[in-house]
Image 1 (cartoon, rainbow, N blue to C red):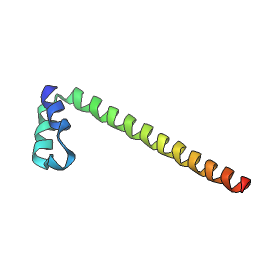
Image 2: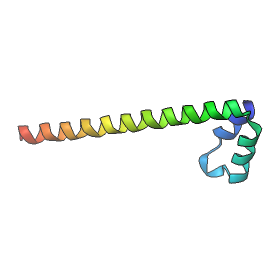
Image 3: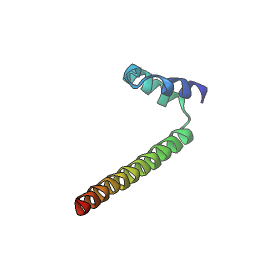
Image 4: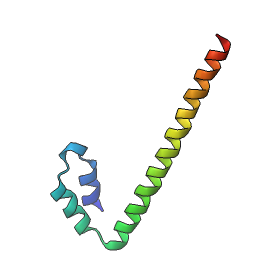
Length: 68
């Protein structure tokens, strides 16, 4: 787990395919499945947040137009 945190804490550009593959190979299968679930949940949450944020910006722009 500590090794995974160290590798994931590097800047994205410094992670090579080989080091990422070594990370995945070093994880037990159950941890990998859990990590994939967390990643999917995070992606879903981020997409939802981005959509809501976009809708708020559009609503704000529409309000400004209606008052000008």
